[in-house]
Image (cartoon, rainbow, N blue to C red; front, side, top):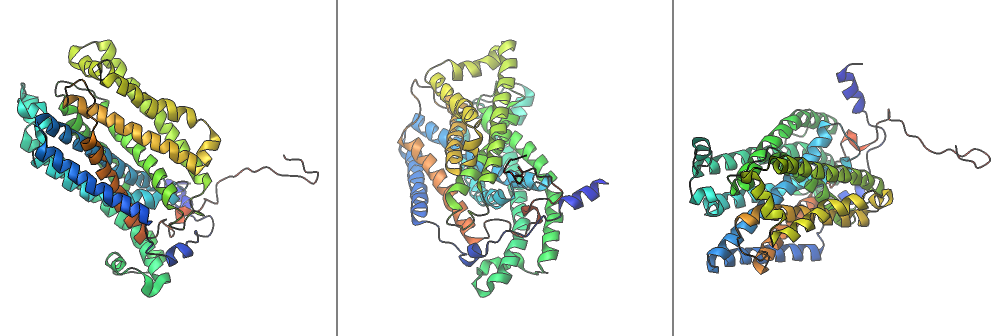
Amino acid sequence: MSDLDLIAAARVAGGPQPDISESLAGTPHVVPAGVRAAGLAGVGIGALCLIGGLAFGDHDTQNRTLGMFLTCLVYFMGVSQGGVMFSVAQTASLGRWGRPFKRIGESFAMFLPFLWLMYAAFLVGGGLRIYEWHEHPMEGAHKAVYLQPGFFIGRQLVGTLVLFSLSMLFVRNSLRPDLGAAAEKMGANAPAWWSRITVGWRGTAIEVEDAYQKNIKLAPVMIISYAIIFTMIAVDAVMSLAPHWVSNMFPGCIFVSSFWLGVNWICIISVFSRNWLGVAHVITPKHYHDLGKLMFALCVFWAYTFVAQLLPIWYGNMPEETGYLLLRLFVNPWAPFAKVVGVLCFLMPFTVLLSRGIKKIPTSLVAVSIVIATGVFCERFLLVMPQVWMQDSLPIGPVELGILAGFVGGFVTVVTSFLAQVPPVPFTDPFMTPNPADLHVHAHDDSHGHAH
């Protein structure tokens, strides 16, 4: 059997598509009042704290504010793009187990335009002042050329714009057949803005095939672009804060952990939204069990990238490299904070996710996801802030917490608002059903009641 035959066989639906008629009947859904109020409040608090820290703070406070803003930007670019890449990975691998989560991952793309605008404002609005090379130009031709402000800003904005635009195109292709098929069922009750995406509708069967062909070709382009552009973000936005330190594994650690972030936030958003979206019968404990196994695998991979990055620096014993680790692992106030990162990112999730049962209970799994998401944020904080704050206390205060609340509130508001307006699962996708060629083994009871 050829590769094309195998792909065609994998696309065969194994049963009826999921019934989300009740969910469609309630579209557009109403985001729970508490969620909307908390999200908007977070945005307001974040804006006030950012303005206050920059406009009324002294030089150190301004640097702390910019450092926290950069930390949140890098973190939520990882969350948002990581969620999209989960959907891309499902498409590229012809995966079925994660399809019910696919629309939730795609919804994260809606926050990318806001992140791009905030990143542009940071880069052109004075954020480069926290970079040592900006205040004190580098010696050596290659670094002096690479770390030129104009070149730095240009490649960051162009690179992220390309990746984010590809993400929006991928989501549009994925969304079109669902919106068209849903509009046929809902008639005049379908939201008017859907027609801008479904213009020229040719019928469900044709549109499903067209969306598949477009995204199966776009997926590998996005995977390669993600690796390249997030490598650039890791090197420029984070590593160049310490311009004399280099690590070849650092970019890989950033873009793999960003994918891990996306998976954990998919778990968080799905658990808290599947009931009011009316898809709890589609996103089941079995799906969370599978998602938990992926979370566990990425937890182990995070530890691997950390150790593989740490060991060569340590046994090489080169001052220009070991200094970066000494500051974060052995110098107060960062040393205790680094231990917290290790517990939240590895020790706790590794131990808990060994349990098969916990991975099958959505409320338990989401608690682990929140711990991991918090741990990775602490890791990003540990990477950025020691380069902009040289005092003997942790730079965690009302301004920093307010800025974080602003990003969390903005992300939750944008994602839930989008999910409320569209079919929350890709119900026309033929990969939403099990492959009939798969072998499933179940216990069998004979006439005497004994299981074989």
